[in-house]
Length: 79
Image 1 (tube, rainbow, N blue to C red):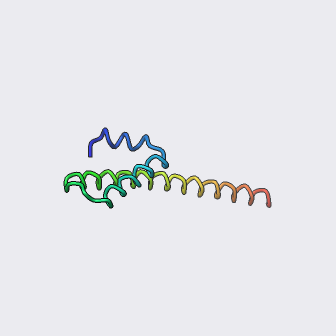
Image 2 (cartoon, rainbow, N blue to C red):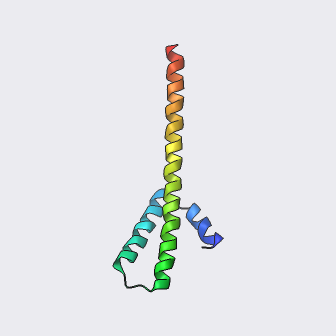
Image 3 (tube, rainbow, N blue to C red):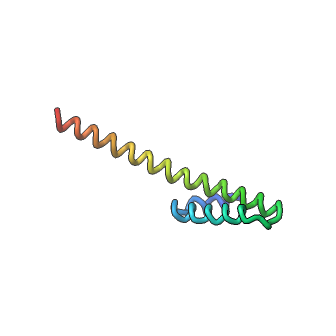
């Protein structure tokens, strides 16, 4: 996969990446594509899945940080 394609994936929102991933999976499940096209679709799907995972990990970190800040602020207020 080229660097240009990777940069394009980095610009996608979670929803855009997920929507494209669903389309890739649908095409693979439908069959009727050549082996070469199937491999290209698989690689694209992997990159899109990785992008979705990056978004989800970022969201988890933000939630963990917010919970940690809330706990610290709450503990300080109780003291």
